[in-house]
Image 1 (spheres, one colour):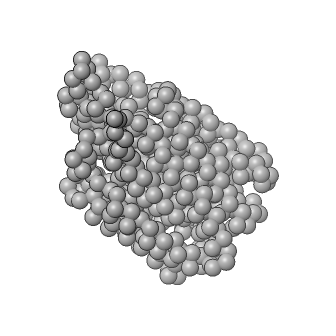
Image 2 (cartoon, rainbow, N blue to C red; image 1 turned 90 degrees about the vertical axis):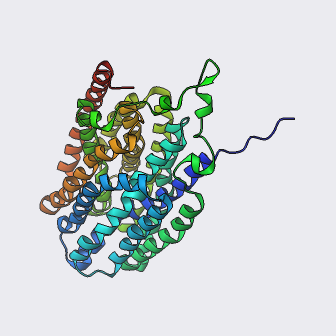
Image 3 (cartoon, helix red, strand yellow; image 1 turned 30 degrees about the horizontal axis):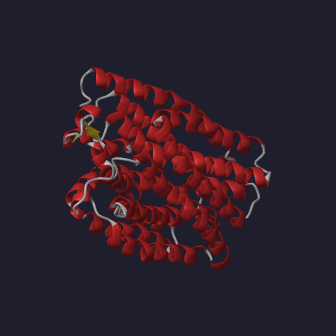
Length: 420
């Protein structure tokens, strides 16, 4: 009699990650842009001055990322994530009590530290620990969760700002995130399969001559010291910079829409379209990367990104086309969360993945320092986002070149015998 096969605990890890990352991103990180116009108008703050808090967040992220990687390896993951959620969501709620731009500058610091663990580091590290098979699919599902929850929370946030005001909406979203995410973390998250007496999903399927390949083979790749000196690493670092600068425009979609004459409810719905695009893109990129590889999937994403830019430059006043363009843009931006980690693994393996990834995503932090407030100041001085859109098209083109250069750099590492 055949026994019913149990669901591997890796899938429960993924479910917990999907809820945690999805709600934290959809309810806090992506929603931040919806508040820019209401806050600047109510408190008479310039768009560039307020969006400067994104830049401070990015500086904090850049400084704290290497520390976060070491902390995750040293301390209990559940304790770290619970504290991270309280810092992130609690600080977001505090924005609702602020009367000066300095409040955003102050509370964005603990918010950024918390988001490093909750939204950036935990997912890739845990998925690499738990999944030796379906890694790309798992990464895609996790990133897609941000789109799924964002599709619900973005329109909800827009309607709440319209009906309850921006202050109450900050508090409602912050408390909601803490109330849902903390129990999920405590119930589901574990750092490694060994804590449950298990092996990673798919490790038993990697066999050679009926013998499981030695454990060292499952940790194949380049050391962090070697990786950081390679041309592949610098190409990946720049890729992270430009793709994050491209994705950063998401925080300015609402001001862009409202600058064209649309209202906050439409902006919230457009961001809902963005989130649906993220959902579909994350799933598509995860599946595509398993089928055609991270390199080809990344090239496809950058080419596709030129489509919404063309629409937004040509016919932004058409509401249906505007929403469609934002949805396609969200589809492409899903590549940050999905392809970033997968490209890191494809280029450098998983021998010292967390250290290499933590170093490479410094490009993400630097992009936030420059792009997020930069877009705000451009709008403040010119009254238009046209030049921003042109710059984004240029960055998409540069990324095509960087992807090709990164994989040429990988070949050099292999030829030099550093991949083992």
